[in-house]
Image (cartoon, rainbow, N blue to C red; front, top):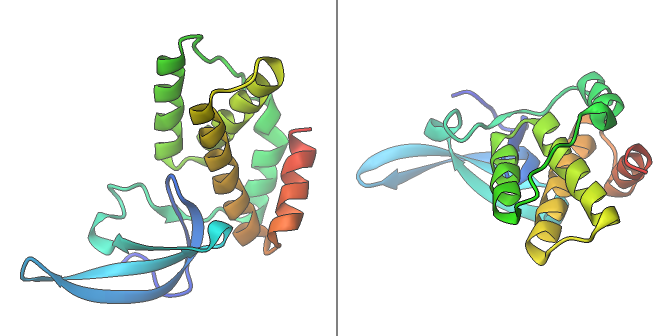
Length: 159
């Protein structure tokens, strides 16, 4: 067992949450353990197979000092996105799936800049919202703050 009840983890594409419980279920005749993850943004409750956490790139929530470093470096990352919509969307989706906070920040930053310059398609607006929620959820759990405070920090960073 990698994680325990009460651990704060990040599930790529959904964000950071707290393991509320561990459940064992019989699937195809085998007993399997699942983490019951509660994500503060949107009050999501997700079950993650404990046997697949590495494949799914689940990781522990970064410490407050790492998050502060991420915020300080967030705007220094070069944003070089393809002009082709399909290629840009595919690259951004891979970044979100990585679970890497820097990659998620790159998606948010690049789409935010693009929105300010030209506007975004509906799909890219949804992707930007997803990236923002992932970042917010990790800010909330690593800094032990509420959503409003996390949004203020993010708005200040990307102002």
